[in-house]
Length: 199
Image (tube, helix red, strand yellow):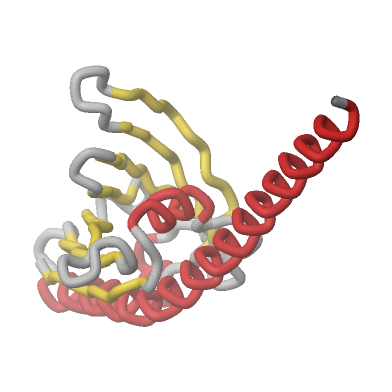
């Protein structure tokens, strides 16, 4: 088994990050073109804790290395099952995912968390990523090591792209929501002015 770990800080509040997280794979993110579909399977809120639990199926177009495909077969479409928990009281998002494609060959269990940065909890959000990668093809240690190393490198290359892509989503979300709030304020002021004139 090999482990990939990554962390960074976003200069946005936890509220902004946890909201924009649902738009991570939208057209605003030009770095996630490999994600071709995100299907919500279930969504529920625990009435006692207020925690939002969501299950999603994420479909990607990612081809395996040619030597892996030559040995084990497969196609370019892959599926990932994701379970997420959003706790508004403790201000924590936890997302756990596991690969469904190639699951007899490789186990990839990834956990991502978003929490307010302790030093600046109202302005910045801490991101942590942890992926445990285990090749399951018994007997071929050299092949197992190679598959795990390729997967770790894949995570490493995608980590920077993922951060850049999510930054663009956060930036666009702040701009759009800011414009909406300003429009609502303008409409409210207009309504108050008309009320005074008519009164």
